[in-house]
Length: 94
Length: 144
Length: 234
Image (cartoon, rainbow over all chains, first blue to last red; front, side):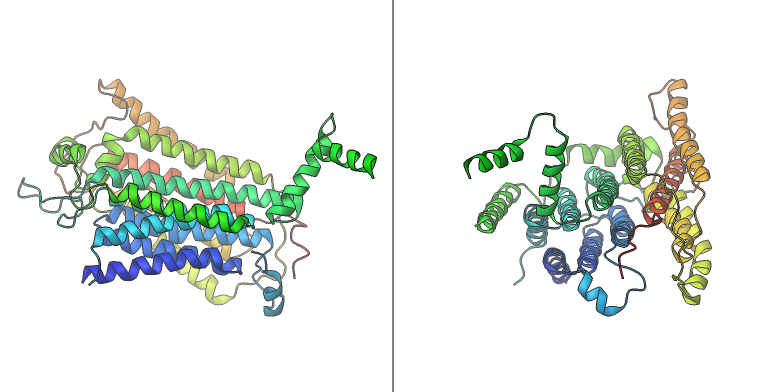
């Protein structure tokens, strides 16, 4: 049973990492990095490390994603009230 | 039918490190470099925790204070090291993001090729002796 | 062409890392220091959480180094971003009633959760860093939800300085009492109670307050936009 969960989590982690590198939209890539942190938290719980899991949850999926999203806003790549058409045109770099 | 848990986790950790390093080497946008750094750090932390993992042990927290014989526990020293490493990782990411914001303010772009040419032009303008680009331009104007 | 050679490099790196780490003994690790710590930590420090006793007791200097790295990163980030000459007035960003009311309701809950995690670091999984980040989030959310409000950086700097100084002062007090720097020295008490494990909860309280104040200041620095920045977007 534990093998099945670990297998699912490892697949989710690797696919999230690949998506963060290959997606064109930078906001989506930041969300994929957050998915990697989330699955890493669940793996840490299953590996008998609750302290590390709590740290990774708070810092990786919370603080790091918040810092990256604030940076995106300050870089001008993502605004709070951007209309949808210009958002698709703007976030085009890779 | 599924492989063993330590083997799967090892494959996941090594895969994350390689994906992160590949992103560092192959990315053209500066922001994606930062994301690749975050992913590589996550993989390295997983590899550290894997060093102290035992399937038949429990978490290193004492819950039963009546007996003095402790159950078999996982190694607490790599977990303390990874605690430090995760917090330091987020500090490094915050500083890198501050530098990326300043680069965007100064040069207006985040593409690595454009940044390289703009920075080389800046360096050539500020040197006292003519830099490599100026010498090459002079030689081409002499030849042509 | 360059992409092909980069792919070749990555495949070679994958092969190398798999061979190197595959030969290490994973399911039955040789825990030399770990076993000694497991047998002695509860009696020596009085903390029920062995990871806390390692972070603050056996490797206290490493925690001090981590605090200074966080301080350096936050100070350098503030230095690189520069002084906010005139913060941009958020003209049209009204985040709505739900977000504002939800944040007002969440603020005391986040404070309580953060302080609980910080103070119970030696009994349950948790500690100064996790609770400190929760405290930083609690003080940063009102700034995010109501654009235009600013945190008072002076208060944050004072809290951070006092917390860091008290961490070092507790360590020096241990030196004064005849032990080594940062050796836990107060009465150990009954393992499992809140007031136990000597100076370990006090050290974690200092760490939590320092990390919380530092990260709140860093987030506030990152989120205030300068006047005239990003005017060309949308």
